[in-house]
Structures are given as C-alpha cells and as structure tokens.
Amino acid sequence: MADRNFDDLAPRFARNIYGSHKGRVRLEVLKRDLCDYVPLFQNLAGVEVLDMGAGQGHFSLGLAEQGAHVHLCDVSEKMLAMAKERWQEICEAQAQAGMPTIGSATFTQCALQQLPAKEYPLVLGHAVLEWLEDPRQGFGYLVDSVATGGYLSVIVYNAHGLAFKNLLRGNFKKFDRNNFKAFKGSLTPISPLTPKQLMQWGNELKLELVGFSGIRVFQDYILDKSIREADPDGLLVKELEYSRLEPFRNMARYLHFVFKRP
Image 1 (cartoon, helix red, strand yellow):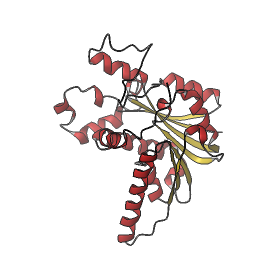
Image 2 (cartoon, one colour; image 1 turned 90 degrees about the horizontal axis):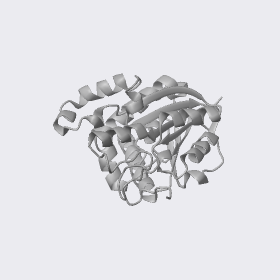
Image 3 (cartoon, one colour; image 1 turned 30 degrees about the vertical axis):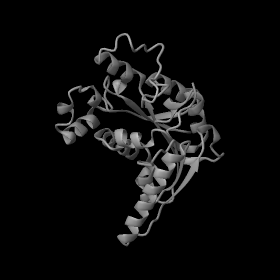
Image 4 (cartoon, helix red, strand yellow; image 1 turned 45 degrees about the horizontal axis):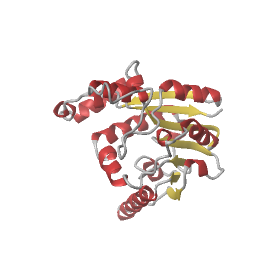
C-alpha cells in the first residue's frame, strides 16, 4: 500500500468535498477552533503558516488574505495548480477592489517526508495523515515543523465514523474494521485513525492538547438526502453545537485536534 496522490481525483475532490455543504461545515469548525485555541489566529499579519497537504488551499489561502505568509505544500501537482489559480483570483479581486495584498502564498510540490527543514508558528495538516501508509511517521514530520510555542492543527478521518456509517448502510459482510481496505478510486482514506491514536501520539511527542472537535458529527448519518439538505443553516448550527460534546465528537466523520508544542 502506497501513500495516496490526488492528481487523478483533483476535480472530483473539489466537487464532492468543498463544493458541498460538507466543506462548509469543515471550514466553519476549523475557523471557530483556531479562533478559540490559537492566540496568533486573532492577528495573522506577518505570521508564517505551513499547510502540508494543502490541496487547493481552500482554508489556508483565506489566511493569506488576512496577511499571513502561507507556504502550501502538496504531493499533487494538479491540486497545487488549482490552488495557484485560486490565489491569483484572490489577488486580482483585491486589486480590483483597491485593496493591497498584504499576505503571500508560495507553492511547493513535495511529499510530507520531503518537507524542507524549517519551523513555523502554525502548521496545518488537514486530511493528510490518513492517506499515508505510515501515519504515525507522518505525524512526527508535522511536529518537527512546529516551532517551540507553536501550534499544530490536524484533521484526520475517523475510523469510528467509518465503521458506524458502514453499519448503518448494512455493509455487514463487506466492511471489516480489523482488516479495512479502501475501494480503488474512492475518496475513502487508506489509513483511518481513532481519537485514541492521535492523543497517544501527542503524548509520546510531549505535545499539549489544547482543542479537540468532531467535524460532521451527525450530518453524514442522515441517510435521507431530502432531510439532510432541507435546512443547511440549521444543520450547521447544530454541527457546531455538538462538535465538542461526547459521545458525538468521537463518532464524527473527521476529527480536528489542536496541539501546542511547548
């Protein structure tokens, strides 16, 4: 099993994830958590940010708009090309509005294992570890990029949520949590993770866990599409409300952890 590259799925990924209400929920949980847990998020002007597995930059380019100097890295050439186009559009829109571009964005095609040796006050690793053959090793690489006193924001695909969704769908024979294999060409990650694993890894590397939320704690379990899409704003309110409550966050489709490196 090899680490996953999204060159072949870039347009589909954009459409299925960020081109839907799923993406809206993810971005809103992220913004709230970082505002609550990361003090430097209140004023990003001049702050250097590493976004590893940046994809199309849906979240981190927004930080560059606020004045951060964002370094986007991804193994996928096509994903980075789409991120560059987005940044160009943002800069052009700001210029047309008579607003100076105070932040910046750089783009580097590389694997997590090839990250240049540099430390940042804020590192983002969103939905990248679960696509690695060895996510524990990948977590260590992310931590190595965090400066002393800096923060690491990690999103991972939740193994508990994957199991629950398959049970609800009646996949009693097809799904085996102890011998899981993603279907070829699917958007299901190859290495789903549990909350316990992330907390254990953080403890092993002497990190301080400052925040933990679930992303999409119930949305995906509403199997009736008409109900799921009937009230997007109301759904978002409840997703945010329940995202930090047990047992809901432990059953979410994705998990968001914020660590501080002492």
